[in-house]
Length: 569
Image (cartoon, rainbow, N blue to C red; front, side, top):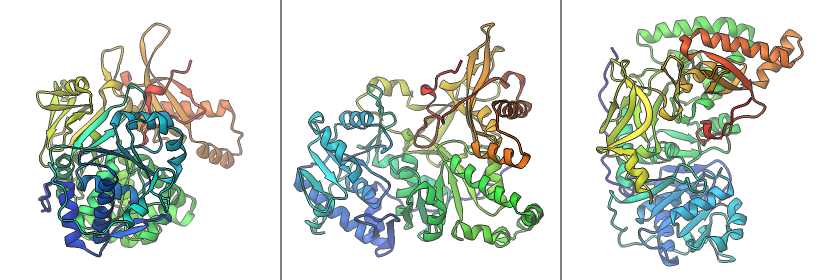
């Protein structure tokens, strides 16, 4: 039985506007946001953030924007992205964050579908905006974050801010239950799906998540995930601002360790792939050092025992050299976007790093369930957030069924798509499309996506994600995608496409003085499949594999875009 811990007491906020006003008042001259790259506005305190919001909002109104107008934003993670987002929230406009990684057609389609009147962008997107200007008839105003002065009918964000003062009688009235944000989860023509969120949705999610994990004004978040994604936006931007902490924008994924050291970050939000790579690198370093490879395992056992008798800081002390490599102040790794490997979670925790994961969707603002610092299960999505109702619809004999969600953080629906909205709700419940179950301690577990289910020849449901999680632990497998395939007898079998890990094969080759041949690769991957199958019941076992030359195309949170993958024959 998992021990229950009381919830943390958190400030009540009714909207994101309410949050910004409160934080400016309470935290004043404390640092709020910082770019580690050199940008026009590279850092702001809470008071400066409030003042910039007032100035930029007044400039938008002077330019011709009105309350409830739509404003799109596209750029790298930076202070000015956050300033645009928060200004929209405070001035009762509707923000449309766009994934900077989309192709040009997808970006243009989202601008069109969202009915944006203004777009704010960084320098790299100016050529596209200029080239396609005649096609985007609803778009009236173009604002460049980087240009110092207005030019060619493109406004300068810095000049707009400088042209205004901070005096304002009062900010516009916010109805927290009106649409405040449209997030498009797919950008391709005819398939754009715009999730409509309210300020109440987001504010309620902030209050609920921080009642489960204590975030303080001392916390420094390093922001590495794309900020347009709801996971990073709510948890990595709004969460520290709400609690009086700070968000620091990493220069790139390659500089994460250096940036953690520079900021002395306390919290890192990441996707499982980031932590997998981190963990592999740590253990590779341990294994390659003769002394460390001998002393680390007994030290892990010793500190496990010390922790069990109450010495909580023993691991950080014993493994201080490792902690210093990450800046020396990390108190929490948080994983989201997909299910992390429980072995990685356990491994990082054994070295003194707190690690928790959660589960959510864009449509739920985003968190639905969350593990807690001292009440967790590494193989579970977590416990339901306060105020969130979760039910398992039509459970099978094992208790698994589609996860339905109800609560204040559930979206209004899909923008200008009543048919899809109606299909996604049932008697007031949001249908997540995920299959899961509750265990005896009330933790939610996720099996996989309903649309990815493979029906085995024995009629059993097979979730590709469960098999991939096991296979991907093999050092020679970089990534994999499991799918159903018809054999020569027209029977459904389990097949998999695999991207091999080149670095692992090179190390193996050099260590054993062997050439990397197609035969050697096939032999090693065949062994990896056998080892995986040993952990699976017969109906889930892999019967066929294919090797890919290229990595899979992925979403922002590193999920494979399965619908783009063609079977290899």
